[in-house]
Amino acid sequence: MQARCIYFLERLYLLIIFGFIATPITMIVLFSFNKDRFPGFPWSGFSLRWYEAILNEPMVIESAINSITVGLSTALGATIIGFLAAYVDYRYKFRGKTALNLIVAIPPAIPPTVMGIALLAFFARIGLFGELKAIAIAHIAIASSFAMALISLRLKELDTSIESAAWNLGASRLQGIVFVILPHCRTAILAAFFLSFAVSFDEFMIAWFVGGLNETLPVRILNLLQGQVSPRINAIGTLVFALTFSLVASTLWLMKKKQPTT
Amino acid sequence: MNNYSDNLVLSKNISTKPSIKVRKGRWFPAALALPPLLWQFMFFVLPMFFLLALTFWEVKSYKPVPAFVMDNWIRILGSSSFQKALAYTIQMSTLSSIITIIIALPAACILAFRINKKHQPILIALLVVPVFTSYVLRTYAWQVVLSPQGLINWVFSHLGVTSIDMLGGAFALQIGYLTLCLPVVVLILTFSLLGVDRSQLEAASNLGCRPHQVFWHVLLPSIRNGILLAVTTVFMLTFSDYIAPLLLSGSNPPTLSILIVDTIKSGAQWPRAAVIGIVMMLFIGLVLWLSQLLSSKEKR
Image (cartoon, rainbow over all chains, first blue to last red; front, side, top):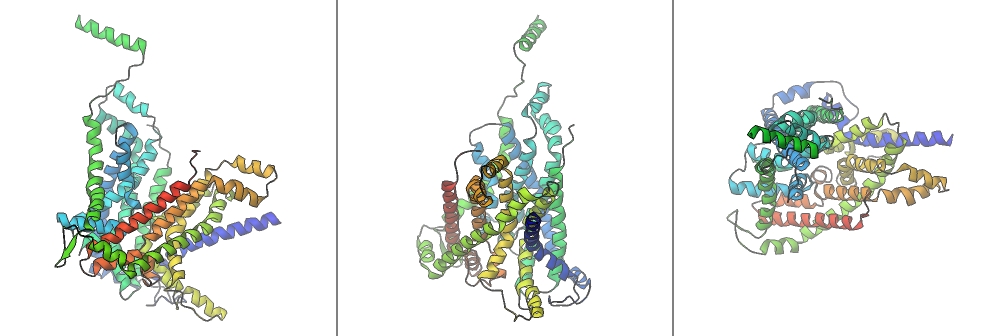
């Protein structure tokens, strides 16, 4: 009896924790389909009008396109930088290796406000301020850390002697990478691409500071939230959730997948 | 003749030791390391040092110009609004660290030890997803829950309780901080609990330890480093958070991040904002150093 009671209390506790985490997301999704203009209770009926409304908002559409452009550039850049850093760490020993690992790993831990002013002042100085390029450059510096972590995780599963065997059989170092390392890491590389995109797509502080008039979607959302809040924000939010959810879920799925030995 | 000696060398190699063909030449690894090194140096290390230099610059006709003056440091460190914001931010971050650990630890214990192993990965995935999912929107959604017309007050009104405005204070701020930190902290603690040798726990209870004794004297000490990592993570995340104070506590009183943004957006006082930024980095460094001191040195 007591054991069942404890079992029940444990499940209840987990339910409350997961409920707390899910509440905000549920709220946004629910109210995006609400007919009423104000997010009051109870719900006043089903409607898709807020989704239609965002189609007629050029600033939202434009910021979404900006976000996707920046996100794709970031994903590409961060995956390349992250792969190179992970491979060099896996394959070679050299002086200053720890320093290289650290400058790739640390950026996400720096307060975004601090990174924000540092990059704002720096980009203003070198004349990149206010361009989408600047946002992507900064996002690559941050997202590489995640890409490197995912790819390193997968490289650890590969015995270093396998690539040496390829060299022994006459492969050049570039061929070793192309025919041994890349095939082994392909799911992790794809995962790194997705996660880097998600990180960039969610980042608002640096994008706000260095983007000037070029707004990304999170920056637009923040600006919308500081004005008269419309339920359109819930519709935008639901779409954003749907995208990031699928990106992060695919990342997790790809990283879990057992690599078929080729 | 030449051919013959080549073969001889080869066979000698095979007989003595397996020949590992060592690819020499340092240009190749250097070429691979160069892009990450250059990129991170240009767009991370350099801007951070530039930030430090900026704290000594002057602002002339709304533009920061190179100089070496202490004026920004004196003004910021001496201003009462900065001191208040610093004290308030430290206070709120510390409080959040305590609250988050207390709420997360039981959840992590259940997830690590009391859940069917089949369900564990999916529950862990459910914690990872929110970490990367629009924190701005999740925080905003709490407005809908906590506001006078919100979900909680709607429930209250049916229970006959008078409505209360929960927005705009330390309570709402802590809810925002929990939204930011809870999934990460449950993950950190769950993984450090999964690393604990369970036979130790069983040994302790076989030797007559009561459950609470096992918890305090065996379990907690063995996840000490995990707890420290969780505390520093909460501190770092909340210390630099801009969204929860902006959307939930109405920036009143302001935190350091609010102060930085205000300093930048209200004119060209970048050097002063840089001072606040450097102070934030120093505090985070201090917290990391403290947790390093407290962490148990032995490697498991």
